[in-house]
Image (cartoon, rainbow, N blue to C red):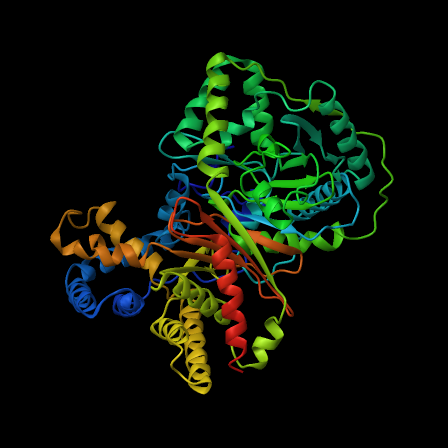
Amino acid sequence: LKLQFLYFIGTSYSQDMSKIARLLNVNHLGLPRLPIPALDDTLARYIASVRPLATDAEFNEHSEMVKAFGSGVGKQLQASLVARDKAYEEKGVRPFFHFEEYWDDAYLCARCPNTVHISPYYLLRKPSQAAGVENAARFVHSVVQWLLTARAGELKDDGGDMSQVAMFLGTTRIPERSRDSLQFHADTSSHIIVERSGQFYKVEVIRNGSAVSVAELIGTFNAIKQDAAAPAGYGTHTIAALTTEDRDVWAGAREEVINSSNDNKASLAEIDTALLMVALDHGDSSTNSGLVSTSESLIHGSTVDLTFKNRWYDKHQLVVDDAGNTGFIFEHSFSDGGSWNKVIGDLWPTCTGNHDTTPGAALPFQKLSWSLSPKTLNSIAAAENKLRKDLMSEVDISILNFDSYGKNQIKKWGVSPDAFVQVAFQTAYQAMHGKPAATYEAAAMRGFFHGRTETIRSLTVEVDGFAKAMASGQDSKEVLREKLKAAAKSQSAIAKAASTGQGIDRHMMSLRMEANHHKVVDPASDSLALFSSPLFAAASTWTLSTSNVTAPFIDFFGFGAVTTHGYGLGYMTFDEHLPINVSAFRSGDTHSRDMRDGIDAALRKMADLF
């Protein structure tokens, strides 16, 4: 079913909907709705956030512009927004709050490739030390058991919103022109799709209401590896490459694939309805350059073992190579890190527990068949060339596993570990580039019904001041220590406000959409000049795009930078170490290795202040 069945259109909810559908659509935990902050509060937080990025003259001019907006058209937009949100509340169907519709559009209308630009990844800790397919079998068995628990309505809640959790399995993003759609099959599907050597295999993983065993899955995955090796290994062309394309291009190519063969249509339907994609990669992804090559294989696929032919970026995907390295690639349009960690945290004890791992008899599996037209073959070749040129050769990744100290020591210094790392990022960037960086940090909003994320604008006046003081070297150790504590405190305050529904960016987006989408005022009106001002754009162009997903089952976490001249910084704050994944684009004025080394240096210098 397309998610329009309950997801995008306002229909009355049936009381006999499945238990998973109820997780998606019913506020069974009684969570609060996302609030709309007071206009004056948002504007005060906004103008403070842009101060480090502006000269005195620019800031004074912008302050007047913000003041005029707040006393003028902003009031009209706010009143309209509040009234619209009240109507959403009374209807009790999607959209459940003021910016949910726009947030869906932000992902589904994006025309860039999912690869690098949208889909983040985890390098998981190995569920076992076994090579081969055992870790894939452990994960699949465990996640299917988790699904059956969800279908029975017996998932343990953690106090957070469960709507994204309901969509973890069986959801697929369908490429369409202008705006993609989502399909939801978590309450009906019973199969996975296994990828090996660019070939696809359907495997039923639920039998008589139970998950098939780890031993059976090991036997099945080994049999698939044998079958995939029989013809000629990787074919010259594999349809998977099309999922790395611009979305409109992929939409057109998909239509050609479907219209040229009933086999193709049926094969795509099996992929669309699958619970999960499982890539069984060749080789050892860490052989070339350790964790960097493993990250490259996850973010865009590798040319070494041709793993880019083994990816399907329209769905969540488990990736396990022949050495047992285990990763997970997320389709980000409908879910965020909080829900990913909730699901994997639920299944992890089963995944890492005791199982019979003697290979069992292989389950029946079906190899998907394709009849690709010359036009499709040309599209695949073009997609592979573009992937190599625009992404593989462009993405620049370095990894820092900082182990001189971690969260425990930072807490002893009386500082928030997350804020401490954020200050280090800004300090490193300014030491390299000589200017402050507009910074995005993701705040989880699972404390609200259907909450997604909010922006933590981690560049505060105090953070900027500390970074500049460190670069100048003129302050004493004692003064720098106090500036560091003040910087961390200011960042923590911004983070707390964002995570409690008092952020800046989602509110400003909704105000803007009252004009642009709902035409409350003329979108071309001079009264909206704030939204088209250069400083407004600069302050929301995330030179540092950062996210902290600390969880005990993750080794590293990564994603692409969101601007050519910026960095993507995926990190975690563990007790005794701080793993940080740095991404950049080679065509920009950024270098991931320099940033990695700069963060390492900043963390060491900051420790010396205590």
